[in-house]
Length: 268
Image 1 (tube, rainbow, N blue to C red):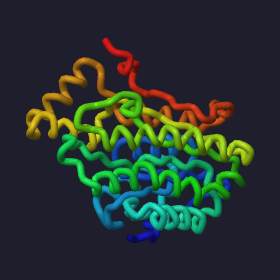
Image 2 (image 1 turned 90 degrees about the vertical axis):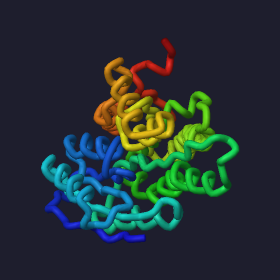
Image 3 (image 1 turned 180 degrees about the vertical axis):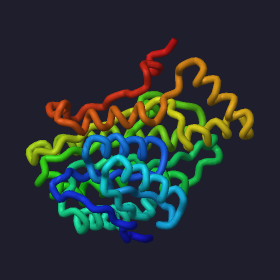
Image 4 (image 1 turned 180 degrees about the horizontal axis):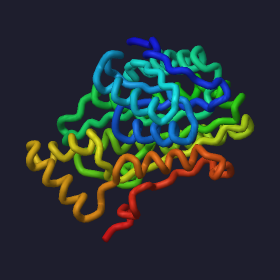
């Protein structure tokens, strides 16, 4: 596990700071970019080495938006230690945390007969335990700033999906964690909300499409068909919703679980 900041960019100590996990691509990166565009400095997180192309690309984009961007590599399958590493780096770099966005997630798309204990342990570590320990570690800093926690859940938390029990259950549990944390932290001035994206054009969605379709070509056809029907979100659609919930425009929202799916969870 690595926990060393990447190359630094000059920053203003008065600027708010957001910690965004799983932020090298997809919804995590879109959330980080939306917040950077609104004046936040960003702690990026992922599994890549510091010199990787993905880290450089994400950092450059955030700096182009005017943010100080620092990267931490930490494996959330070790949720307590990784969470401590991430929050320690943020506090050492800036001395404050104003928003925590828990976006890192993994899936285990497996038929019932193929699911193992390790699938459960890995998915719950990243999707549920890490958000808990991140909130625990960041609570004092967030209370000092009267900050915000946003958990990236999924509309999968609301329904049962074939061959997807491990992921669906992890997101349903994350939704309840949002409620518990909102209650626990309410009197300390910290708001906690959940965002539930529907189908969004991310690496995870394309991985699922491969599982369903059997190969890259079939997966691309499934994704493109969803796009043509207007049923596929761009990650920036979700990132902008996250930025809204972080903002003072949502100052009276806490304990909310907000679908961001274009209404497609409602059926045909």
